[in-house]
Length: 229
Image (cartoon, rainbow, N blue to C red; front, side, top):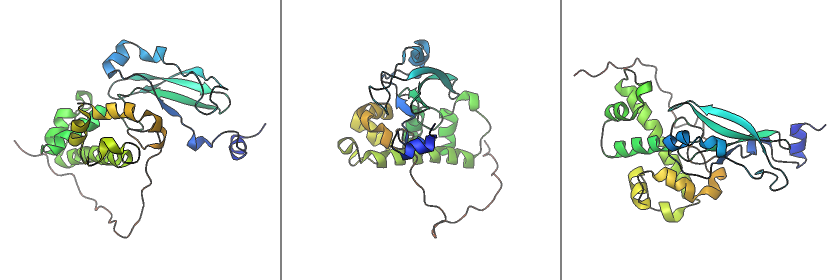
């Protein structure tokens, strides 16, 4: 029997790293509705995204998203490609913990001028609430703002009419007339999700150049004391 690598090389199917292992669940429920309706039970995958109508994947249980609460995600198995596909609800970010709405809310709050510590204390889940320092809060907010920047750059290649001139999450909300613009955008660009990076798309993360001359390593330093008052 030919190995997986041999089959991929001979054109049987794409290499495993290129397989569309995550797909969009073709509904737009909130997380609450997804859980109350037990939507993972009714999720279906009529045909294999690799072989088309020639192969119908079989159900393969679920995997669990742990944040913001334990949530089962339906999986399907293709015996030809020997891989599984998961159907991700629009409310969840791809390859990143939590929901798309959280990333968007953090960015909107930061763009309004709110300081990182207050944004973090307001929007972080109560279950994960800890005594957080100003520096840690700035990192928490900064990561999500960086993700939004990745999304907006990627969207220029597939949704120029919706994002032309858009530089912030607030502007994207205004352009789409939606309080959950990222969720709405995932439905708009559904055919292109496999080529777009996370957390909106299901493709790989963008390449990052390492060890460039302009990069300076961060110096080790203790966390600052929490602000008083």
